[in-house]
Image (tube, one colour):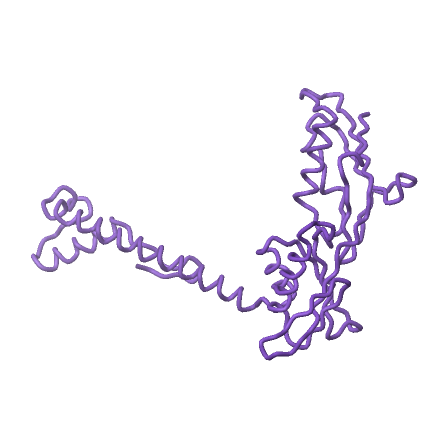
Length: 269
């Protein structure tokens, strides 16, 4: 089995194994078999089954090595980004079903950590949810990092000390959307109904946008979503439709655009 740094261990082919057998037979018995004349001999028939078994073991060994390499890579990634780092806190919350965002650190925020979590504080079980989020933050932030926010969860550490663990709720921004779709003169496709178009737009936003992310209109609806179109334009308005923009909204870590179906206007040219 050969080894290369880029591909790892490579199983030996049956042909290579059989040539090795042939060379040893020639050496042992003084024969002069070649690759062409060795095929069809009793030696070949006997050793071929053995060569197949050897290759199977070679393949299994290479697969084990590949899985071991993947394991080491995954372990290294987890070590390089432990749960107490900012991305680690977000991932830990996400594993428990919470979408979160963290403010990018600046010099003025040294020693502080600002976390926003997308939860509904009007829900009947919010007190339980709030406590669970506080516990996750407690277990996922380093000592000395003081959490900031309007939602306060007083908890006691294992050493008996009591601390407040905090987070923020989203800054929910009510947004109207206006989608203009220009139908191509060369269109050969059936044009979707307005409701179908709006629902596709909402599905794309749900899939590609979340708390703390910049709102990027060009990402949420393209000509691929409307193959009958020659041009699409998505605009947003945060002042009830007085003014419209198609530029990127540069979000704060706790900003969240809210765009229910009734806030979407579709214009077909």
